[in-house]
Length: 408
Image 1: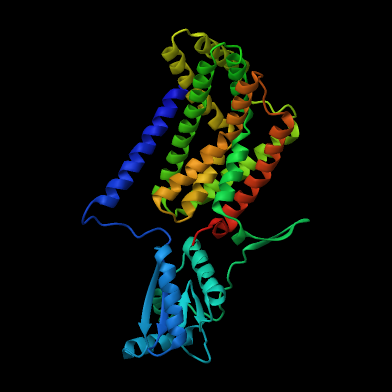
Image 2: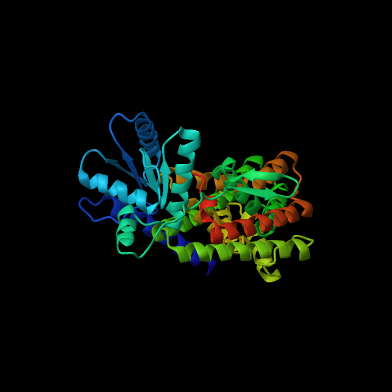
């Protein structure tokens, strides 16, 4: 049954990937707006050095941020542009109008100093606007004309620093998506539901006389585990990319993260032995018997096929034991506007870190011919770190999703 579920998930991932590729490649097809597109309007006039500096900055910004749509309005070009500029000044109660005047996310920026100051504030506002949503300037002006809205206060830029006990102030901008990937993958990798299977397999392999056979069978187990997990992650990622910036999806994943964090903390407090509670004794016995049969199989190809099938089945069990980490990670990854190849590089990084502990255990065991595993202390520590981390991510997904965007 689990094998059927696995094949179904892989099929769904393949269909979603093909659908996305077809939609992007059909000539003349109508395409929906990119998720999170943000309109930035700059009012300028010829001969203004600060306007030229702002335009150079925005031009460089657009090269790496295709979601940022910049509109340049020369207020000296027509009476319409002058009237729009005056309306903007009235709307935001600007007492001393001047150029450049940049409007993004419902907030005006009068003047431009340099990239680290004014430029950073503009990009920060654009990030917030990209994920929270904001109307276009024309819609704001239309609503203002009708008397439906009045802007009397400039919205503040979201604060991206948090205060942590002992550590103090931590800037989220100093963190990175690779760091988050490594953290979640490491916590996910210390998983007792797969660890015991690997330790049991290693115990069977170290008793063999054929060292090459030991490397091949153990390596096949690890490689299959990585490929299966990569398939799961890719399926989640394509699903979230297809859904786009649907708010209920982010909220649902946020609650999954909170539930996962609570599960990990509960396991830390009640599961001192760090045992897998997903598999029951009957299932364990079946897996152990199947591993013995595969390892003792004299025909190498038959033994290899048995190990591959078991690795896939074990990772299906581990998916249920991961408590939502793959779904949470891929949602955060989808929130960061990256090219497709970078998305898959992050998936590869996740999988590499995910199987690193298993690889270390396997390599040490083969070299020393001694089967060993992670101590309960490390497994329980992963539960504690994972619990706190998932609670933090869940809270951010629900209340401050822009803090989880590390690319602009």
